[in-house]
Length: 223
Image (cartoon, rainbow, N blue to C red; front, top):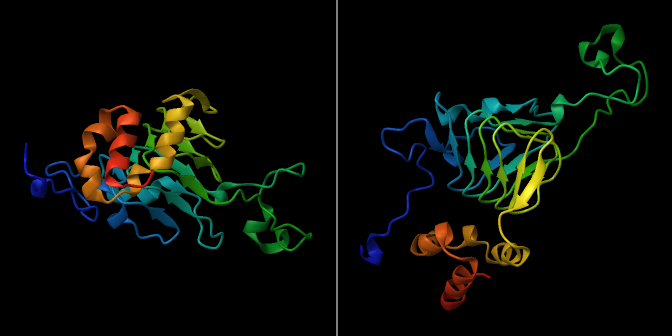
């Protein structure tokens, strides 16, 4: 076993942390849009390069101001897309056509013509796995530890540590019993110092939840 001093974690501000694999990158150092927030160690996999992630955040207009907030240690597969509020149309009238945006005699015709649907920010928790070609709709919150199956369309909030699949995505099952989910949400291991995360990787990645809780208690870690 290497000495503790040798257990050096990767640098979360390294855009391409896997030598020889430029398709995988930590997103935090690659982002340019201030309306997109991503936590440390969250990565994106794309054959064209992870620097193209922002192309998959669709209908994201600065003047609307909605944010995409993604937590730490998330795994985002190729072709995952996020639809933001700029893609929403009015549905109360007979037509959904956005006459207003084309101007001329189609603008300024009635009160409330600017009242397009707005479902708020889109939020993805920590330690979430978004599978290949998944689609997340505006205003959705995906809880910590959740898994979104490949090609799922997430139209509603996803509970923490749930596995969802389908179109629209439905809960298939919880990853752990409810007591364990409550423990994991209390531990919030992703907020521990990265040195502690590195020490306890065997438990975080494969150990029983109660053993992780015991280790946290011994070291005085949160939870």
